[in-house]
Image 1 (cartoon, rainbow, N blue to C red):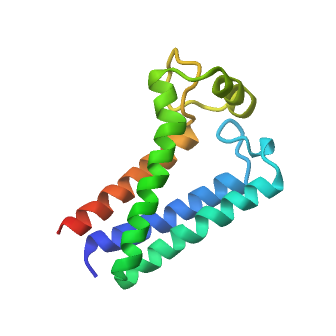
Image 2: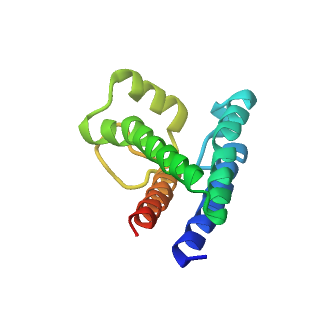
Image 3: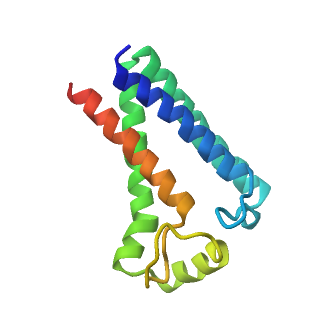
Length: 144
C-alpha cells in the first residue's frame, strides 16, 4: 500500500469519528446539537458516516470504481459546504441565513474574527479543512 493511500484511509477514519462526535455529542461553544432533533442527528449520521467508512474501505482495498465515487462524494460535500458557509461569508448572507445562523450557531466559537454576520464556526472550519485535505490527496492519488 502506498503511503498516500494509507494517509487517505487514516484521514477518512478520523473524519468519520470527528463528524460522528460532532453530530452526537454536544461540546459547549464548539457545536450546538441541542438545536437538532434526535431524528435530524441520526439522519445526518446515517447519511454521512457510512460513506466515510465505505470510502476508507475502497481506498484501503484499492477498489477503483468506489474510489472514484468517494472522490465525487467529497467533491459534492465540499461544494455544498462552499455554498452554505463560504459564499455567504465572503459575498454576504441572505436575511434567512442570518436568522438561521443566529438561532443555530450564536455563541459558538468562530473560526476567525470577522465583521460578517455569518462566520463559519470552528467545528465547520475543521470539518471543511479535513474534507479539502482528503479530497486533495484523492485527486493527487489519481493523477499519479
